Length: 430
Image 1 (tube, rainbow, N blue to C red):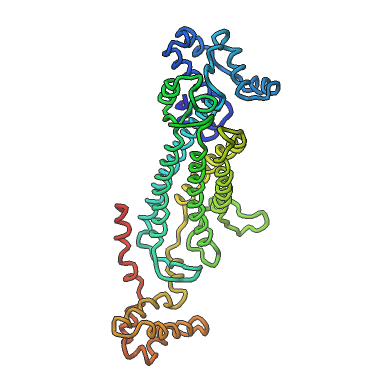
Image 2: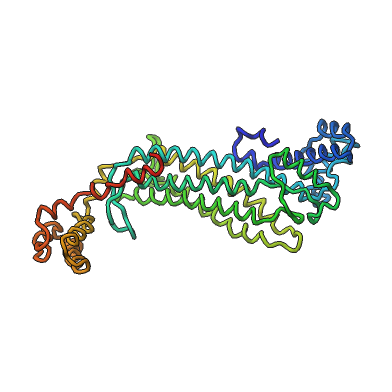
């Protein structure tokens, strides 16, 4: 059963040995069901359970002759079982075994990915709380906008991760199906009881209606979900890459004492883990289109999907497992520089407080569009000529009619702009 890999890595789930083992588990469970129906002697099932085994190299050897991997597998198993092997695969078609087996692999892969997501969630939660009140500049279009906190930035990632956990659960549940319904899904040579028995024993649900295959919209949703999660991780990594730029350097990937950043430049401290996450995310995203194109098949089945899935399911789950772990490590040891955040907050000489000046003028009775123009013309003097924003506001004859110097000065404070941080965190019980 698949539980034997509970403590193994993703690679063990997708190993060729495990792939055949999952199919053997399906075949043995089907024999048990047929025995309950009286189609197979119970004694034969005991022999099958005791002797059924395979050798991967022997399967390859037979496959080179017959050019059919499932037949090669069954032949190999039969060589070990003996005469009772005639009862194996009774009433089944190859895809009954293959589709049910691969979904057992997906089931275990999903458990690993959910565990990864839970670990990332906890690290994000811890660091969001740590920097809950750490002021930093928010940027829109890459340009300084209004103050935020670094904790809110991480809380956003935490929020996405919570959604990704639910997405992953939903996609995993949608893939938790099996089918043993024969060549075109009509149970022509097999009793539906066999399907029900096998699926229940292996922890799957019965696909209510199928052709020769489980319909590939299941797989398309699954792979798309993996891509969405990968995109969220890329968003985190890209933000860290931007914040680590030399001109910004508000955060930095952990850099060990013996680590080296460049073969030519000893000074380099590069965001290599973040870049790796972004790159691998692109790979996972690229599997969505093949998964979608696998949905339409000729009539009750063709084999065009099979070769695709042998690549994209192991690759996408393995790659996502990898970058989830990488992202957790990235956040866990992320170096954060609050003083640099404070310095950057003041980089524009108070321009980020222009919204507060505007609102103060409106509250005193100024027409909003007119007040906007007053504040903007003083802001542009700062952008273009480097003049002092606060002093120019105080000297502006139009603004002086509504605001005193003290009232203007009171607007140059990020704290009122962050007064609802607790409210936002409270939505997550933090």
